[in-house]
Image (cartoon, rainbow, N blue to C red; front, side, top):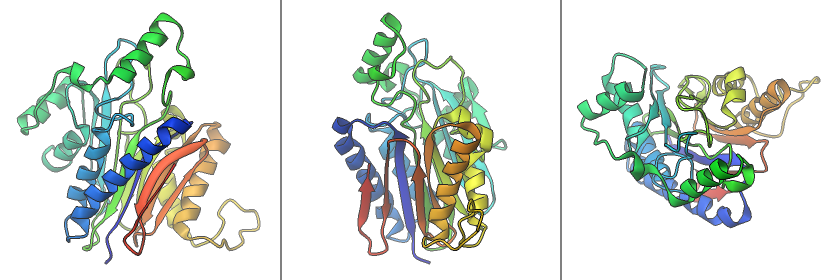
Length: 311
């Protein structure tokens, strides 16, 4: 089986001045993950490495550079899911972990539970050899300035690169057919301490099933949770190549992957009036993506091995 990889850096109103940073960040993430997959490496190793690049990049709302909550602190969520076993590892409200995806993987592989939060998750991470950092190490200057503007003025979108979006994610398929999906986020700016969005919730911000495909979502979490969007997209993948929202149910001149992505985002808008996007791979590794925001940062490895990135 030919390996496949797709990534995203959030769906939101990305300003012109941030386009280059978002595109280059997605390309670096692709290169890191593909360096593993193209040599026959495991999809779990590739997806962890891919997401870590995005978490380390302050252009995105995950890990370093995450939005600050109402108290001026970073609280991160992350999840990774195994399509073969349907087992997930999820961590939430992390304040002292540089790369939350590492904790999610540790939970996936070494914990009897599928989700651990807060101080308990950080304790588990430390027990697994994942170093904890000072909470201040996760705060970028740009996000601190945005938070101060909100605190001293008002909570307004113009203060932020991406006021509600910026989550990162990836889906990877290796040559052995192992399929994994992952999502990581710092959440929304000025969120209530302890708020958990869609990203670490199975079926909402992330889902993988080797019989159909894998998905990572981004956008307004409270809306995404209402329709369990990642699972909805996977369910659309199980359908034949038709325009599933068309009353005539006529054939579409697009792949099932593209149809599934589009229909899941359409469902988000239709049922919740919410905004967001997603990336996915079907079980054969075909990529799909869709969004109803002004822009979404994403990239994938084309059939010829070239990297395709866009905002």
